[in-house]
Image (cartoon, rainbow, N blue to C red; front, side, top):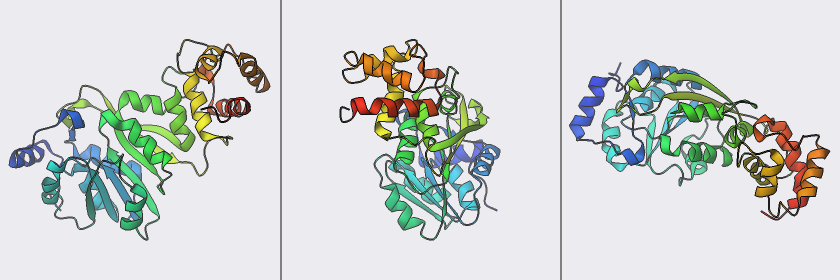
Length: 295
C-alpha cells in the first residue's frame, strides 16, 4: 500500500520539495488527517463502478483516497503550480485525470461524457475552496449534471445555511435553492486543526443527494428563485414588505401581491424564514401571472 499523502510529515515534505507556498486568494487549506479523508469518502458511498469528480485536489490527499475506492477520479485544479506535484504524488494511480481548469468555466457535461463513459454512478467529492463554495455548488446543480450527488467540505456556517429547516435563523434563500434540487444533510463537523494552514473558521462536510424531480413543481424556476430571494431581502421585514419592495413595480402592484398571498392562504405578516419550500412554490405560482416577462 502506498504511503498516505495526508499526514503532517508527508504534506510538509511534499511542499518543501516543490517550494510550494499557499495562495490565500485561492483558499488553499490542505487536509492532513487520513481518517477524516476516509470518512468523507465513506459518505459518498462509492463502488468500483463509480466515477468521482473532485474540485481543487491540492496535492492529492483526497484524490488518492478516491482513486482507491472508485473506478476513476476526474479532478479540476485551477492552480497550475500544483500540476507537477499531483503528477508526482498520484503517480501510483492510473485511474485519475487532472484537468487544469476553473470548474466555474469548465464544460463539465463534456468532461463527464469523455472521462466516465460506461459509468452510471457519479459523485462529486471535494474539499471546496471556501471563498467560492456557493457558486460551485449552484453551478453543479443548475447545470443538471448526471451526478448522484455531492459530498463536500465547506465552511460550517455555510453548511448550516444549506441544511437549515424553516423557522430557524440559518434558513434562507440558499437553503431553498439547494434543497429544491437535493436532500441536504450535514454529516460531519471538522476541526480547524486537521488543515495546513489552519483556516480561521470551523468546517463541516455536507451530503447533497439529488432528487429525481425538484422538491416542488413550479410554473417558472427562475421566478420561483427570484421570489425566494426577494422574501429574504431584509430578514426583519414581513413577506408583504419584502415582496412589494423587491418585485418589479411591486409598490404599484401591492393589491395583486396581497391577492396572491390570500389565494394561497399565507399571512402577509409572516416572515420569509417561516415558509416551507412548498409554500414558496405555491406563492411564486400565484404571483407569476402578475409578473410574467418582467424580470
